[in-house]
Length: 181
Image (cartoon, rainbow, N blue to C red):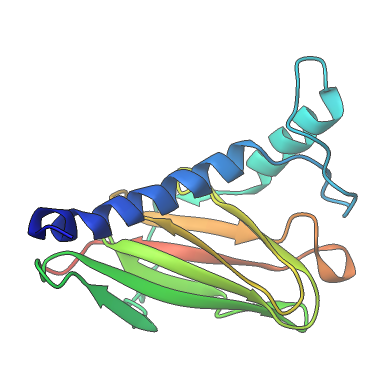
């Protein structure tokens, strides 16, 4: 691999992760009651389109950052060999016993972020508010990944959508704070 290729691989991977997360967000269907999702909503598919609109309305973005928000230390940091300014901070969220742990992660604006989402005791899914706009489903014992880089400070909620224990209520937030210079 050429030197120039190595310098660009991390940003390309991060961009691909974000693109997949956004695409997943726009192509989900089904209902919050736990029914199986149907195909991508088509013109006239009022049920799936209505469920998607309902989910979008339930997920919230707030430009307010809690005063006590301190960056969460990443579980792992991947740094480019050729450019130490290019890094990917990796965080882990676990679905277990009807909760997301941790329920909140705090990241710096402009950071490249990867989230690994693991379902321990049952199937879980996670929908994250736009403009992060990610949706992942992890079957029991499985880990799924999504990524983003967000410049807009604020609080982005995430929640269980279809694979929710006891009908729902599993939620949390990703807080984006001003990055320390």
